[in-house]
Length: 250
Image (cartoon, rainbow, N blue to C red; front, side, top):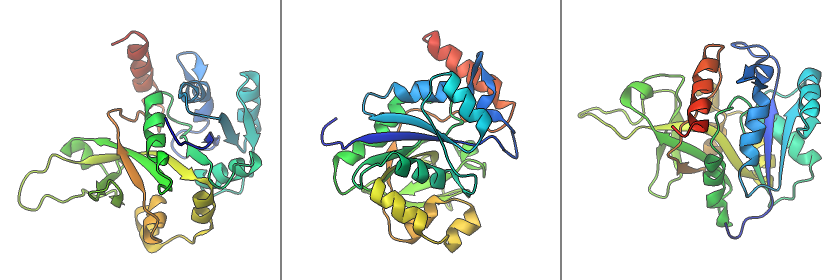
């Protein structure tokens, strides 16, 4: 991939979770979840560095025991993006460097998704990227599945938990589900975290809307790969099957 500056993948992880406490260390096919996320991320060939960022001593110790580079960050952060920014500062990422926010609960992550996330940064004009994939109407009706609609230049018009676009007169089969992986130029990440939360972000509980409300274009790459995050204990068996099928070539 041409014209890419140094790229840093940061995996923010915290122990506490309202739906699944301690999930970063839950065993997936015999290994802690953070091991799977780190290993899959490292398979992307365009990354300068991959690190874990946490505020928990248990996660920090487990990462060190598995030789995973890890940074201890503040426990005052209100979201993963703030933790990613602190880690990027500790790594001294330059203003034009690329910082990737890789969710710590994606053990079945396909490394190609990270390459997809980086591709638009070959253009110096691109400041923020994220991913989306095609979903069914039934999937789109789920408020836990965030949807996105795009302009003709593949920048996001809006993200919502509601059904968008709403098919008023006829059936619509072109829904796009958002995948919560992000790429930022370091300078833009700094500017993003410094912004106040806007009214749309507060209503939808979607922090990417803060960027749109403040005029930052988000370039959305449509990937063929799906997200398989672990939100609840019942998701463990699902991602174990996904990983097992991949290893078996199915």
